[in-house]
Amino acid sequence: MLWTLEREMVTRGVRTTVAASAGSRVADELFVTGEPCSLPDDFERRNREHQDRVVELLRSQEGRHFDLLHDKSGSLWTRAAEIHVPVLATLHLPRSFYSAKQFNNIPENVFFNCVSASQAQTFADLTPAIVSNGILLDRFEFHLGPRAGLLWLGRICEEKAPHLALDIAARANEPITLAGQVYPFSYHQQYFGREIASRLAQMEGAVFIGSPSSQQKRRLLRSATAVLITSLADETSSLVAMEAAASGTPVIAFRCGALPEIVQDGVTGFLVDGVQEAIDALQHIERIDEVDCVQHAREKFSSRRMADDYQLLYGEILEKRSLSRAVPLTR
Image 1 (cartoon, one colour):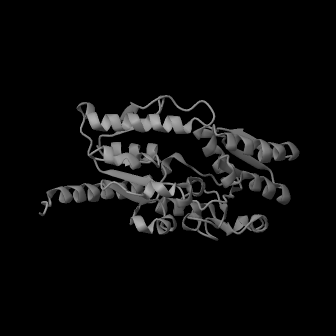
Image 2 (cartoon, rainbow, N blue to C red; image 1 turned 90 degrees about the vertical axis):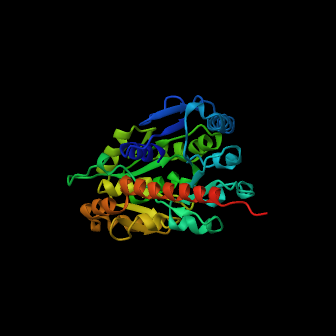
Image 3 (tube, rainbow, N blue to C red; image 1 turned 180 degrees about the vertical axis):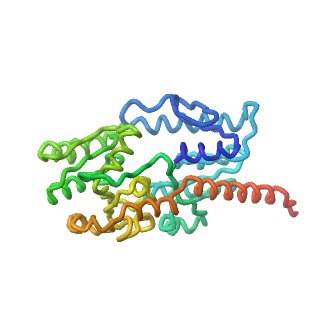
């Protein structure tokens, strides 16, 4: 989402500096905070390194002037008291994924936004704005030709439950492609070995593609009969569901979190409660019209709309900060 938003802002003439790992692709300026993680369970060290470098940059300014810091990392905002620019923290995760102490003594220069209405309800005490995610629609295409097989696409981890997608495919006697990355966390790797590798070894018609390229993802999305989203967590958004719709591909998704805000039940796919309902929904997948999926994506999921909303929010934050500084102190 950072890559998509930064690209949109640069096309509008906004100067941007992206703080990220070496090798990152950005539209304007890259500020390198270190090398990407290469060892398992190295995230905490790398995150501290990243935060330290960003705070150092903002305190020194290094000849630059920054109007606002947009934190999409999920934790840098907790150090906002060390800097003077306003900080917009986009909360991408369910509230239960954050430590409760993160929300104690929130610095006064921090503002929050959520990426869906259902997520915002769980953060109501923070009075967040809501800017939903968007995708680059022009990168996706659909065709009216034949489609074959099911697709599960995403991060390979227990809360997203790709093992349940494999179970659905096996019980429905459907071929399936499982595509995604196993990140360098030991519990992710253990989950893959325990739940995924064993199922793949026993299933005919199941294919695993590790760390697919963007081009591979787009090809898989436009050629699948349906995309399965089997997350057990309260998803705050779903780029996969958006990308599937933009590709004209129906989605069968577990009814949790923000998925009912993204999948239009009976129009762009089906919302289900559990494995058996997903299997039953596959029997009706031909009812979903590819053109309706694409039209829904164009109306709801544009990255331009997302950038419009963020640009308005940036302006509101800067105005609030300007007004707060202009108010004289009373004795």
